[in-house]
Length: 206
Image 1 (cartoon, rainbow, N blue to C red):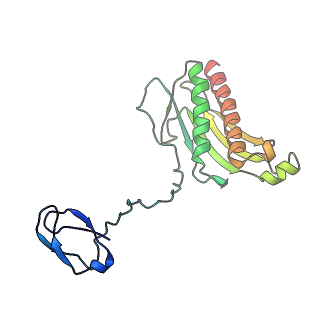
Image 2: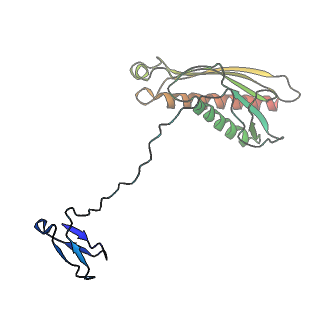
Image 3: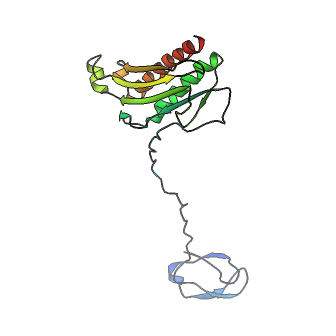
């Protein structure tokens, strides 16, 4: 076994049958006794922080402002309150997909977009009516059965022009092995955003 000198800390070794024997330390010459129990250094494992499971945040009734107000931008808002939602992930993922496509399409035509929290005074008012992810297994077995469905309504209002309402029901039927709920609904969100962008451009040019 190994043990240190209590005077100078010199490490030494001794057999078990030498426990209790006295002798002088070869390093500092001080008298010492072979201890009955050797001092053993124990490695302390590093502290691992606890894993905190993710928490799903419920979607607010409207999309919050994400950028400073721009007086020259086309004001838009999406309301999700009271929507009939049947899906296994956060509906805000679909909202973000629609926003991204709308912004890209309109900005390409010279119309910057500003998202605001309230639909009041918004030039483009969107309201999510319903979302249904359908059944992936049934879609895989029988095409056109249990599609993913996204329903959206709203109106487009430019200054000096009458508001023009719209209502879209977008379905997605096909995907690899029936398509996952997330991929199918994001396809719906992207397609309906393209249609709405075309409506905005048409109304603005009329």
